[in-house]
Amino acid sequence: MTPALADYHVHTPLCRHAQGWPVDYARVAIERGLAEIGFSDHSPMPEYFDDWRMLLEELPGYLESVEQARAAFPSLPIRLGLEVDFIPGQEEWIARLAGMADWDYLIGSVHYIAPGWDVDNPAHLARFEHGSVAGIWRLYFDAYEKCIRSGLFDFVAHPDLPKKFGHRPPGDLRPYYEPVVAALADTGVAFEINTAGLRKPVGECYPSLEFLKLARAAGVGLLINSDAHSPAELGAGFDAAVALAVEAGYAETLRFAKRTRTTVPLLAESDGTDSSKWSGGA
Ligand SMILES: [Zn+2]
Ligand SMILES: [Zn+2]
Image 1: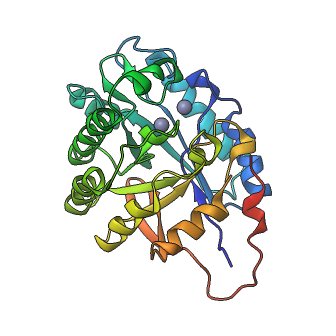
Image 2 (image 1 turned 180 degrees about the horizontal axis):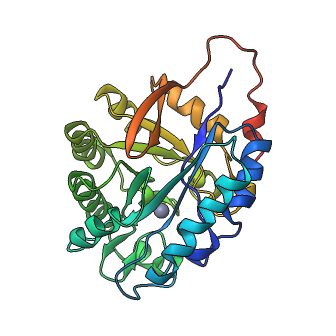
């Protein structure tokens, strides 16, 4: 029932918290019947910034590792991307990065909601306990809207990341989602269902069903990605993600090549009912 999906959010050891080189992922992608894979390791900064991304001098090695995978598995489309941290003031740097390789897509991400505070880093978990969860969510979603409106990215990652450890403000969450969905609709930027949330304390995909329904109603394009930090996580949780997308009304997903998108159906007409291959991951 599920046609072959792509997985475009994949990390390599260059970010210092993932394992598996592109050749290793490509082998697993073929085993699991993925239609395409794409790499999107954490982007370099102009100078040392934190300990969870490649250094600028490592960028050529990254490009080479993707080329090696393409050479080893010529039948598999292997895309080249980056997961770029959107930080206000870094727009010029990001525009320079965009010219440094023949990217198939650039993913915009917000991890930093204030200088030195990456919201998904367990080192800052106490700030949820001692501060205002609503304040944290507001900082994040304001930054996320700026990320979308920057015009620098093809799609944006893990939309409701601050729920990672299970913290949500009380009440109606639509005031956080709505400006972001409007920004996506205005700019034509797409977003992903990211299955990494299934493997985190929150235990569900990013974003929530409610976010997805708003995005669907606004005609915003969708991708489904694993955010794999090891080959075992490739395509992980895709059954659940497809079910969530369909529940929200989605019937299509996107592919990217050379920063141009195409649309493919999410569900095949009627080619059996075997969706079990997407359960293969972690
Ligand atoms: Zn990572
Ligand atoms: Zn991320």
